[in-house]
Image (cartoon, rainbow, N blue to C red; front, side, top):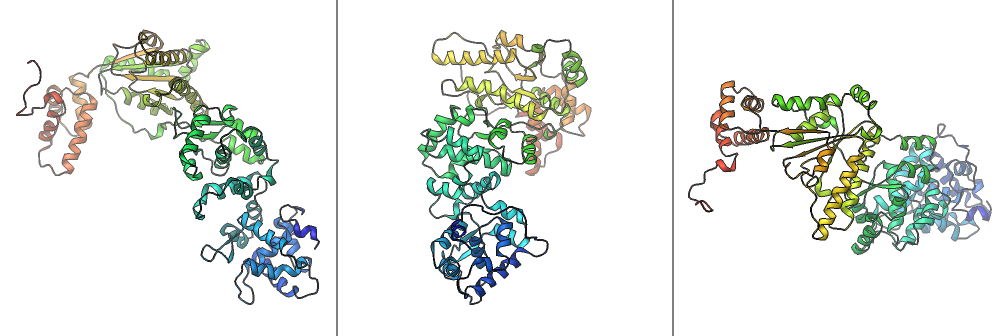
Length: 577
């Protein structure tokens, strides 16, 4: 074996043909023969590794340099003298094959440790052992798995990143390695021709954000390719163990501003949150897959691009519990066209007669609280198999100037993305949207200007909306007239009449007679939401051992459902009489 090959522990000087057939003999058996050969031949005058049976073939097959194969064989197989297999033992055993030089052997050992193919025992810190995944692959004879453990090429590189950075930080008593050492462990230099690393060098390095941006960039790629998941930024900050101020500065300067190059270029996207806060998730876009990961095989690329994973937070229609709803005839008549409109054939026929900009449908449900407005939206989505993107007003409003407006536009972009990912029409639901659609006010302070700007954005987005939007509110007197015009359907929900209310009592308390239900409806003209509260409290009271009869317990609970019906003795009335 030449000096050149002895020192070539970092490259791949071999052909990639599989000259070794794992079907004929397990790799671990060959390693045992190599180990035995080393002990036998080391006594020869000027021995070479070429003389060791099977070593050259196995080196080429596994794409591992010969000296590293020799180290692996000695670590994998117990030696005849039962000596502890540490660095000193390996140097002594292999020096005859390296012309008496220690450096190539020590370099081979360190390379295998860095690549996590072998490791030092945690207790002795001296004895060397095979890495668990590598050991399993050797015993099964899985050549492709063994090759993938060597971090050369995109998939092995990203898998190595997951091991070194994302999974095993607790193995080191000193936490995350220094970034310079981390780059060596990740073999960035050996993979410098990968498109993702070229992009990282050209666009992320040197932005004054230390190494957080570099590690986050690689973490997002690795998470998507290896685990098909997005990155939770806060969890990532905990993993890399950077000072809080440094992580916070990066979050504000790069992520919340969306100035970080992978976000600005559209290769990454913020998912999982409408507001840009510390709990955001970041994922890889289809464009990012194509531009940053072209080295992946066509099969893997196709799998990533055709992934049906929906990253936008939503409520799946199949997870919405069915709930029969009862409405008075007038309200039922107003809701019927909305039901029919969601029939695909009807919608297609209507769309042919409308201009492109008129095909969005916005529905406002307003009126008495607890009458089934929100539940109607959910049941409508369940019936027509529509994923629901429900908007929380608190996620839109921000104390930072400009953030609320940005979050408002993001809602509609997220909705468009949800429809694209789900490959069907979805429901955009603004629940209890009083604050969003209230009248614009005269500007007397900066906050008034911000609120008006937010409403103007919603007006603009609704004007150009292509989809199905529903909003519920209990207050209508403060509704801005411009919003009122943008809602194509406006349905008022009143408290149901006696007959419907009695049927609702029977719906929640099965077995209740028609007469008792009608008496309860007259005595307690509750909304469906209030009757639901009575049922829940009834279940609790029975579980706690109440001995009252069914009707008596229902009436006792109903008596206390309304605050104004409660009588608290001993308290004077507050006010002017």
